[in-house]
Length: 133
Image (cartoon, rainbow, N blue to C red; front, side, top):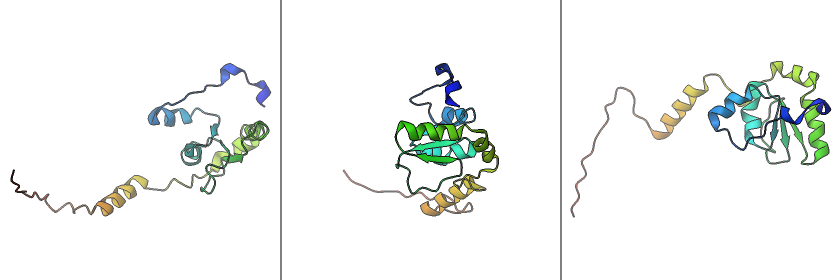
C-alpha cells in the first residue's frame, strides 16, 4: 500500500492548535504517534490510529487503534493494516469509548456540583470586608 504513495501526499505539522486539528482529523487517513489524541479524539472521526510505543498503555482504546512497537518494521506493518480496505471498512461501526450522550451537560453539572454552585433561584451574595492600613 505504502509503495504507491508519493512524498507530496504527506503533510507533517508541528501544531495546528485544537480547532484546526479537530477539523483536520476528518480529512486524515490515519493518525500516527503516541499522543492521547489518537486514543481519545480520532475514533470519533473513524480515523485509524497507529499508537507507537507504550506511552498510552492501560488506556481504554477503540477498535480503530492499532498498537505497535517503536521500530520501522512494526510501524510499517501497522500503517499497511490501517490503510487496508478491510480495516477501513471495520471502522464504520466503531464506537469511541470516550464519547457519551449529553457529555457537555454532564460536565457542566459535575463542575457545578464540585464548585457548590448555588441554585438558579438564589441571588449572588456579596460580603463587605473591613480592613485597616
